[in-house]
Amino acid sequence: MKRTKTLALMLAAVIMFAIPSQSFAANPVMTVNLGQSTGAPLHGANGFLYGLKDSTSLSDSLLTGLNSLDMTGQMAPDGLQHAGGDAFKVSDQWFRAGGKFVQIYMQDIYKDWPYPTRNMTDYLAKVTTIANQVKAHKDRAKFLYVPFNEPDWIWYGTSGTKLTDFKNDWKTVFQKIRSIDSSAKIVGPNFEHYNSAAYRDFYTFAKANNVLPDYTSWHELDDTVDTWYNSYNDYRKIESDLGISARPITINEYAKSTGELGVPGKLLQYMVRFENSKVHAGLAFWQPEGRLDELLTASYTKSGAWYMYQWYGGFTGNTIAVTPPTQNGPMQGVGFYDSGRKLSATIFGGGSGSLDVNLTNIPAALQTSGKTTIEVWGVDNSNGGTSSGTYRLSRAAYTVTNGSVKITVNNMNASSAYQIVMLPQ
Image (cartoon, rainbow, N blue to C red; front, side):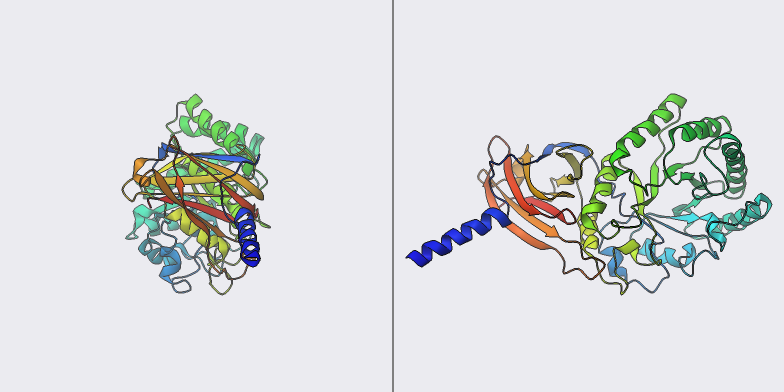
């Protein structure tokens, strides 16, 4: 009897500290409002720069397994910048796996990095060749042109004569592309980081000269993820002030070179913000091309981050309002509810310790006799190696009170990601 009681106490302790439970501690609080839709999932963060090297290194299942694919940025046809990554050589597999479009980095036709000294006569000839190649391609409508890569520090600058030179060259290249491919979708200005004054100047010029990009782009490679909403809102205000219709935004390179790629809890910071803002985005290229920017290991096995992006790619129905403990803090979350599937899931993480999660406005479709079933899953950082996959922390039925349930997740690791899944019993 004493031994049985001791085991029961030990089991209770494990439950208290290892799996979600009803909690009364003053933990940080995240609120998931299943009754507030924020629109259809874009899956915009499921993109890459040089995610593919060729048509054979990756099995289709490594791509289709991510459920939804947005964009990949690749080298201009016959380019010299990298040993692999030619847009035309990877596009068949990308589109077959469900990828929406391929961005062509046109300056990557050059071998040198940074690019050779600016020579517009030479570059315009190369632009002409690329545009003719794309126009003749069977999937021409799925290719996007990126004429300039980080012109705020390569060839040009963000003010004065350097910015003026960029604007004039943008106009020249834009008009050349459109003269060959009248339906071309053009991405720009594609700065290394967002610059409010320079973007306002550029868009004022672009509107006046009828050379507005079809997609607005910049990169998020520095310690700027916590100021994302400031940059996004500032850019949208520029459009509004200038009377420009809202452009789709593509952050075609995101995440720092160290400590972020392949780390679920770090990459979640970007995923949440990009999905909340409904923008397209591609993981940055810091390692050899073809590994989905470290979602895969050097031997093409799955990292922990691959599984988090698989979760995200599986979002259906509508995304829902998730309020983190603080808007710009590390603990973040993004979720969906699909009434047809009778399923809701919320990915969260980025912080350590314990978190209270308030699940509110739980629909009747997720309840049986006043209860809803909740599973909590996790996936850890695999530190560049092969991940053992996702693991389930708990599964339990909770009584829904006034449309809500509160759970606590303990012992969270800041480099891991977690998922709450809700379904009827």
